[in-house]
Image (cartoon, rainbow, N blue to C red; front, side, top):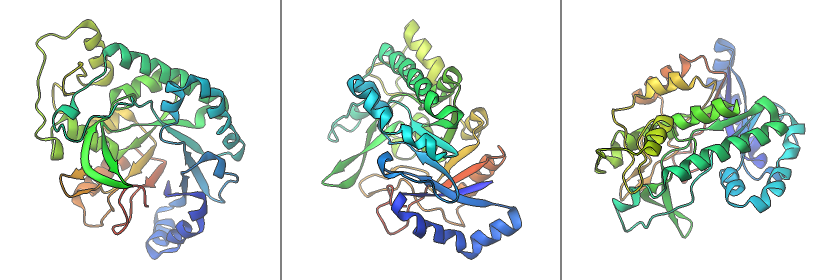
Length: 316
């Protein structure tokens, strides 16, 4: 099994220092763990392969840019095609996001779904088309990562402890639908899954969002519910008919690559953003989730956790 540290190209030597720590050496000697990197950042800056096992996380909005700006598709793909020659062990992409942002002043309103079933179905098929095109460049090394149902606000470069509904493709069961259609593998981000289930199960900072069940779904809404695994009727708050269990989804996804953090919620309302929280050795919830992941016999674990002193989003 490989344990990876997230890194930009200019951080490699610093991140590699972690592999020399006593706990890392113990893992290598007693468990046979090997180490490496998941590179992030602008693809043009990735000009040579690291000396260890490595993967690359394609830009977060690449799929959305491809979707919303078809005139730039050839250019977008040309900027990443050189990566194939560097032979990363895997490349991971997020699905297409629907670019719609609700005002931070409208508390409950900002969690209502504004998209029609037809729009979601169009996005799903577009995402399959994109993955098929990318597979022509990267083959089976290409993976798709699940994404949460939230996004938090930014102002003057600061992250604000308020969230809003952020839909698109690759949120829950639709990830499995896309993978089956495009025949690609999954990178399962445990934090993203936890936050999505917090929303659908109305836990943590989503406990106050009402569950307003429709008496009768249209045929398109039923189709969408079957694909996504939860209800996405327009002008309603997405919800699951029954609580969704994290263990069940982990088993269903059957991923071999995982992103791990210490997060169990995305914000503490009015206080701070806590995404990418540090992993603490005495965290019983993390240990429970880790056991679920290890039961799937993973090949790669990416410790996608921030430091406890830096801004907790992406300052690994």
